[in-house]
Image (cartoon, rainbow, N blue to C red):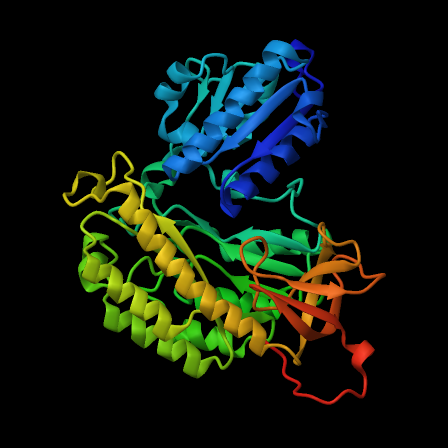
Length: 469
């Protein structure tokens, strides 16, 4: 066991950003717990505080800086004696971070999470330089890609399973390759081992994540690729895992074999998270997406034709450099015509070091905001209408927990709703438990969300019966 330097006995971790960062947070918490440190839920009760930051966009950077300053205030006024900053912002802006926020004791980059115990305890390491553990992806051993032995922050019944990290696509607006490095896929047996551990810990839903899940296996010579991984998981995972969900897919290179795997694998839910970013050919070219509108439309048509009932979630970037009013109108018409099941919009953020940051045609903030609002208004009308059309149907849902706004209801999700980012099903019932699957009859809609009751309460009632994927 590593000695607890400076008498550090309790540690709190604040996790910011995406599910990929959350997995890193869970792994760091697992390492800290293994070495005998007590995990505090409240930073005010901790001897050391770890902030696992996000640095993808300016808004995320500002949130990270705010949390770091809160922790440093606790070091000044409370019991906290050490503040450690980890994650993407650390990897991206390490020198600026130390200058801008005095009081940080250690920096731990995204490739050095295995050093978190030494950083928290204030112990030196041969790779440390000036209070920083900041390696590079090529310095990592295969063992450091292993996400097992996590102390999970999600509810026990669902988990995120990272199948790859980094990205080699080179989109002009994106900082991920500079922060996380190129694509690095995990060997399939390692993924199976991690999935088995999560299942043993109670997970009935596994959400597959990575910066570019479409490219899984291409860097390690795994010829079956993502389709082969989906089929293997469907065949080999313990029976307790009921839902396998694909997130962060890239449209270019999404093959017929991948579509067929979603269609034919019983435990792979009929859902795909497929960020498209734009639909105008001019903007797709400026973004270096290496895909055309026609190719996107062909892929979407195939998904809906070959996977009946599939739920398609996407995200778009609004107001990127060079976006004309016509580009925006093309995107707006496309959103109205295609009617995505789930959709998010990011207002373009000019990120230093990216190729797009150096391009001409940057737009005023008010123009970007107006265009984003128009897109979300269009999607809201589509989503509200879709929710109303669900009234009267019976669907299978997974219970997440009690509704924090109404003690007489539970929040749940159908297979077509990913955790944390999509709409929910609000079930009026008592005695349900997280992780429980039930049949629920939709009786109303509240905006994006559905309101339902257990189907047994409607036994014998007439009306359409259809299970939404």
